[in-house]
Length: 304
Ligand code: G3H
Ligand code: 13P
Ligand code: ZN
Image 1 (cartoon, rainbow, N blue to C red):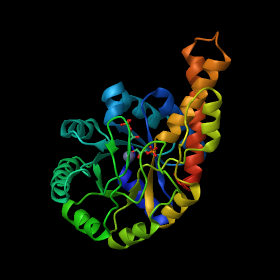
Image 2: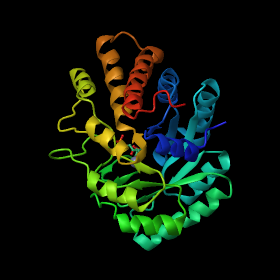
Image 3: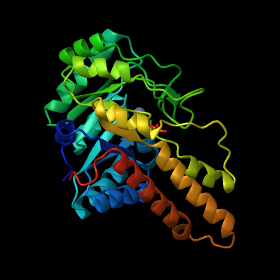
Image 4: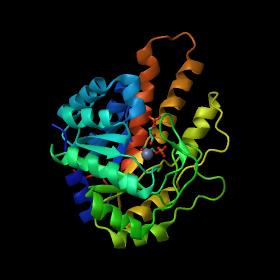
């Protein structure tokens, strides 16, 4: 049985920490993440994007996550990340996801409200909670993209939450998806976050929050990756964002980099080894280490 995302976030809100949302695409990612959560006694949210679902299939990812949740003693929630297709959202709700995100942030305000309200009504009937987004988070992933960042307007956020009844809100305060988050100095708009926090009570979500660790980047580059110009959100700013009320933090890029660095290392250093377990086993360990670092940073260790 999956944990209730809303309860996890309400608890985090009460005790001033953030729950880690980690994107999954395959078994090694799922195992790396839940092993980290179990080791640190932390609640965790596994998340599937529509891109991940296209790649692996919703049933496969659901069953992997369900098996993981059964095997560990920490709360594991399953979340649909950046849902845009109503059919995918409906299927996730019916299948038993803990929560879904409706991402209509690219639409005009009124249409975002209409689409979000529609999903809230559908999800709440089944006891599933809903994350919505207001403002736009920059960057480009496989199916998730936006060219520029439009900061969330605190007054609009209040109106949006009141009208839609969404359970948590993803805010745009300067982060973007992927490994190239800032052209110059990394700086989140914590001043805007502070105003949003004053205006609304629902838990707040930070997307595009990966740190893009220099250590992992160097390791991947040592074995052939080309990652010039990458930059993530500094850890200190993540801690400040948590202090200002962020209670769910999304990480995908950091796991991809950790996975990539480990795979590259095996391929380059063991050219005669072609056993997938020897290639993906170290990637799973590297993902676990990265997830542990993130969980510690979010102060959710020991909060099961
Ligand atoms: O927020 C976006 C996530 O990193 C998912 O990316 O669409 O490439 O799976 P994806
Ligand atoms: P990163 O690309 O910074 O890991 O963000 C992931 C994310 O926001 C998933 O929804
Ligand atoms: Zn995101």
